[in-house]
Length: 404
Image (tube, rainbow, N blue to C red; front, side, top):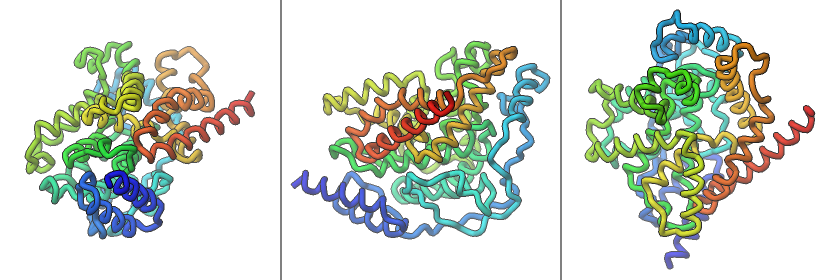
């Protein structure tokens, strides 16, 4: 009977995600919720979602690099170099001097969604705020956790306004990863035990996705450690940026108006979970994530939910390589630009900006392939991600041959 129910719910979920209408999808997921206790949150049929975000939230794109680099003295040589290099990068993002037009529903369940296409006729940051709040609205944490929605909206606005403007690690990346994690939480699993998230787990994972690169400067841990940056000294060269991101996000909550933990019951548990999840995004833990997933595949009794939350976060964080090629290619262009800036800072006399995009993306696809292959043995949605990753690898290999 349990197997029949599981198969039935999986079929419903897979069908729902293919429906063109978000409202139809919500109806189907409510049916699943009634059949399976694992789907505990009530899924909204109508997003009664409106927000009044105006031009005041359009980001200032004058590149105050001293704040981008953690408030360093703007006369610092590194910052001067960074300003020059960043200005040479032609950003695709545009700031539109327009008001947000009431409320808009986004196709938040669709992994083929291109986050860069959503800003038409809407300022970038307000659009990303609206998009992200719709995901949190979907899970109805107001009912299940007594989440104060006003505080949540305040917090979300500050988070997205606080993301800096490096080519890759910006507010678009945060929203993109949030949606990926949201889709993973909706994924059918090969076993019901892999879906035993409680409401606090879901909230912690989604919030972690939103804040996981908060105030990212466009540099990496290796560079900060090599240059003995003050943050590397503060965090003893251990997951430097990840510690910084979560710490800065928690500081926002010190203001009562932004304290989303205000009405929650198990604050310590949620806070601890968020710290662990964000720290799990450090690429230094990638091989451990691969090994942990392999262990669960071989021995299901090894499944551990707190650990799996970090693994799912990592899967969402690097998931742009699993999106359709034209989307993945854009992200590849951006990360290559960011790596090029770092390479130029490390090797100012070198004429090269590092590996060509085609080669770096091909290597990265090969590097993460085992991770997604193994994770697809646990979560059915990842099967499609893994297949698309293989297709993208083939495309990059074709590009490499053409340039040789």
